[in-house]
Image 1: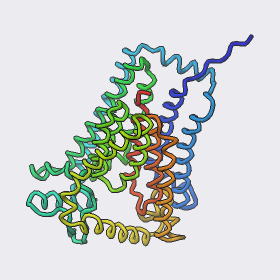
Image 2 (image 1 turned 90 degrees about the horizontal axis):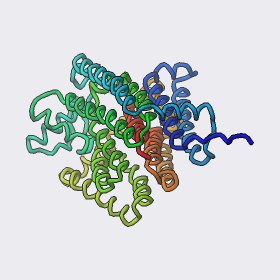
Image 3 (image 1 turned 135 degrees about the vertical axis):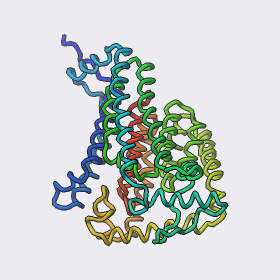
Image 4 (image 1 turned 90 degrees about the vertical axis):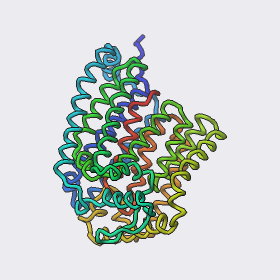
Amino acid sequence: MDEKPEVLPLNQINKIYILFILSIFHLVLIFHEAIVKIFPTLVVGNISISILLIILFGLYYSFSFLPKLKFKKFQSLIDHINNFDTSKSIKKFLLFAVPITIFGIILRIITIRLIPYKVEIADMLPLIQKAAEALLHGGNPYQTYYFPYPMPLTFWPGLWLIYVPSFLLNFDPRWIGLGLWIFISIMFILLPLKNAKMQKTSLVLILSSVNILFFQISFPLISFQAYGHTFGLWLWLMLMSMTLIYKKYVWSAFLFGLVLASRQTAIIYAPILVAFWGFQAGWGKAIKYLLTSGIVFGIIVLPFLIQSPQQFLIAPIQHYRALGEYAMSLGETGWTGNSIGFSYIIQKNLGANYLSAILGITTVLLSGASFLLARKITGLLVYLAFCVTVFSFFTPIPWMYEYFPPLLFLTMALISEE
């Protein structure tokens, strides 16, 4: 009788496929400008990339519903990796990951030194500077500033308060962003190490090595260090993911409150996390965790909201509406036309109101599907990455940095201990 082929554990298939999604996602962001030029128009190129990413995520979930795959040669390769001496694998991982990380940090330092800090290049950090100065002088940071063009403070406090020390101590705020990135980079090394020691397998170290390489040499990420403002949000998302992995659900609720207080669109995470908390800890506790997040959110946001609800809530919406109209006027080569997603084609043919309606319907559908696809930690993290990606496809101005949080969630899924 023929020997029955061994079955490759489904979680190992999933982790390998998560790295595949990560790699494609990284390559799309790194070579975006070159890829879209292959297609007849930039819009067609961006729509094609969007469809590709949706298919990649869809294939991940197909593994969860299909029988475990049986590939003998693939199985023998995985078995060979799993039989590596873990202590030796850890040393090799460190010999690779640490120098690559240091190299990536040096590239970011050079970028900060070469690119001047001024509003003509990007206005996010200069806007935060004006808000911080207003706060330090006892004023309301949520007001309209002039560069000389008028611009309200569109960022919520959880995003920008972390930069206040740089203006208090009079140093370049980008060094705070670099410090946050260094911390995130260190965690990208430490978490796979912890996983490898607990699981007694070298597979996660090999997969993480490839991902770390992409993160540290990615030109979009390196250039973003010179003007970017969302590193605090990335830190909250990473810490929230860690507490979810290690089942510290009260802390995850606290950190979700910080995430909510950092970005208006973070509300899309709420139903997904409630679904996960409900399946993992019970629905009563899920409601308590959500209330905890709400309290943290209120403590951070309310002191600013009550000073001027109009400036805090309405002015940013009006600003982004006007900015969206301007971006559309630039055509296919503008911010919206040359961005990944479906925003430009929908607004051009149907109008902004239809885009808002489609975004709302998409959000409802994603929220409902979370009760099926976000029951376990790895599935949750991949689903969060998928939801942020799809949500960004339908935002009026899909800035490229909006696609970095999905990379973060996929990274945490790669190293989750499931």
